[in-house]
Image 1: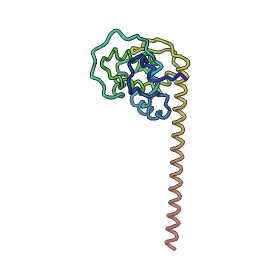
Image 2 (image 1 turned 180 degrees about the horizontal axis):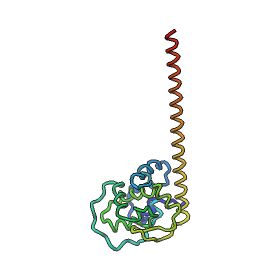
Image 3 (image 1 turned 90 degrees about the vertical axis):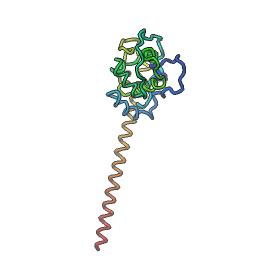
Image 4 (image 1 turned 135 degrees about the vertical axis):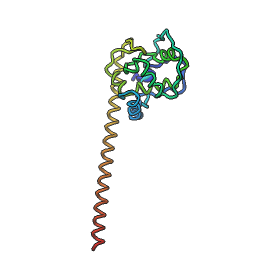
Length: 201
C-alpha cells in the first residue's frame, strides 16, 4: 500500500537526513501521538505520520524572511508553525514538498527537527480526520493546490481505524484491571472479616 508519511509533506528528492521521523502509520506509536498532539494541535504525536507522500513540487515561495531564533524541539517548532502559517494553524492537508517551502521561508531550519515536527503534525488525529475527507492540498499560506488522491484518503482512514481500535482496547484493559482489583479487594475484606470472627471465638 502507498503509505502517507510525514514525508507526505517532505521532499523525497532533498538530501537524505538520517533521522527522518518514522511513518505515522506505525500503530504502536498512536496513543503517544494523540496525547502530545492534543496539547500542540488543539484537537489532536509523538507518532510520525504521513510525510513521504508529499514529494516536492519544486514550488518554493519567492520571499524568504530573515531567519528567526530556531526552535530547540519539534514541538516548539510545530507551535511556531501553527502561529505563523495558515496551513498548520487550520490543519489543512499539506502540499507535496511542504518541507522545501518551510526551508525557503525559514533559512537555517534544522531538518531533523523540521521532519519530526511534520511527523507529529501529520500523525495527529485532527490531521488524519482532515486527510480522510480532503479534496485538495494547501501551501503554507493556505492556497489550494494539487488534489488529494484516493490512496492517501484511504490510508488516513485506516490509520484512524487503527487508532480507535487501540484506544478501545486500552480502555477495555483498564476496565478489566479495575474490576480485577476490586474483586481482590473484596476477597481481602472477606478474609479479614473471617479472621476477625475466628479470633474472637
